Image (tube, rainbow, N blue to C red; front, side, top):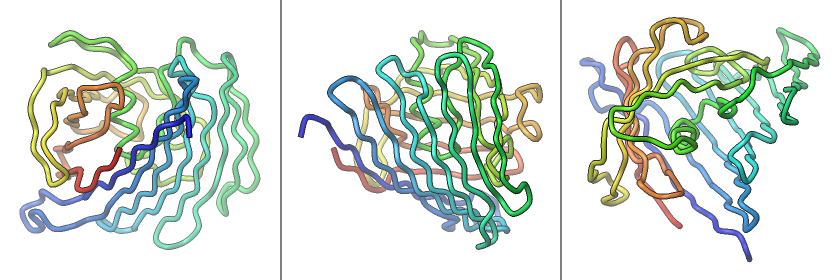
Length: 237
């Protein structure tokens, strides 16, 4: 095979005092890095707490310039089908074809505000990979212009085109040890002052990714009302 495959699993745990370090879900992922520079990410996510539960399956492809090509998403909320959809970017326009019990059959086309930095897909590994598409110096802040199928913090609404502009800052390089091993990482923080376009202001979100071209999510956590933690527990290249 001419492509490389990277696979792993993230554990979701709680940092709420009454649920400290208790499991609250998981995520499995696979990156396929093709010889022509294109990348396809696959992820299966299950959020068990808080109710209602969320299950998400996505397939997301980027071209050799880290521009989004297409995104497939299927969503179950409270163990009930919420919706499925397909998004495509042709360099100028984003189109969405989706279906859900509350929205019926939906077709959308939106002229994109350029340049765009990617599709927001909601899996944790995708958050980390998005950060790798920029060049950084310590302390530098970038505003990411992304289009996503749900502005909800958990992505728990039927697929429809939404635009979000969220800031991230590079805090520095750190060596991090998790269950999957010890990694040289870059530490970032997503910051939303309430104007990003999400359903509400998102609490500060710290992310550590591997300091290499693969940009694999190693660990991270969200403060505020969420009080969640994510950690790489299995990893294969």
